[in-house]
Image (cartoon, rainbow, N blue to C red; front, side, top):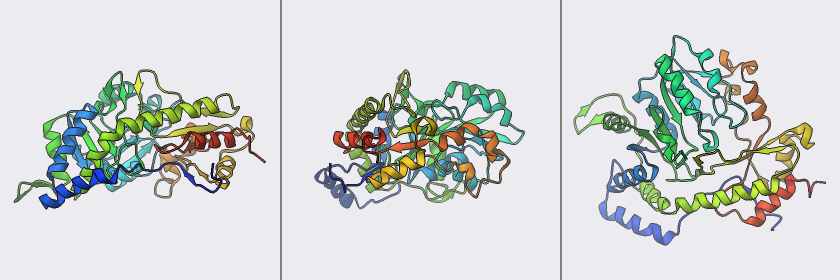
Length: 374
């Protein structure tokens, strides 16, 4: 392997350019660049069919999709959520003037712990917003049971969970709404983009209005909306990517399997195995480093990999609750988030992407197993 070649945590797969050009020619011929063009409409239909969902509303990115989902359900007051996610999860609450209430995670799959939710519910709580971390489904039945008991809405941040199914049913069909990200780093991409999954035509109509300034038709504005429309070029790219996504997931699965074989038995290194009955998309490959057993901290390993041109990422560190906008909240108290803090200080996501070579995975694992450690 080239010693000076950078191996990044992810890398987008660009489909053959000659296959993209006909889509661009169609757009040029239509002279329709945005605002529910024909490719946008086609992508919504094909994605709904692929994902096994009834209704999908495309957005220009996942953050605006999440902000709009909260608006669509009239969420206010407090929302219970996880500190162990990308900061956009909580930023979407802030933009809606909602107070996040952080609850600790469970250690096996790093998702919001249902056993901790009820104690955090107050008279101001209006919803629960869990994250399917790394694409591993939350304990959705338990979360819904709590939501039903207290009359709360459930909005899933499913940014990592494209195509994920539990017992052959899409995880996107759980909760009141689910939100996807189609960012360039995701398993499935529209370069930038996102979507909200809903269950009724009325909610689909509501979301479609919200992302287009609140307009209904040409002359009527029903509500204060926003401009969050996916354009035709993004839709074209998404249609082409959809033809390849099954292959992407198969390749990622093979890489995950290779990591598990090569890292198995290394003291102090833990990785997540597939969940029983779940169809995964292999968005990330996180490992957890127990410094006492491994003989090196997560940060020391992270830096050592970097010196060897391997660039993992510490997803998710720091916790959202440690960032300046949120660290003064009562629920950000580290004593209440002991598992999240421990995981955040141990986790390291290793490179995983379609073009990652077997020899590169072997090289990464050789570094982790200390074969080349000085």
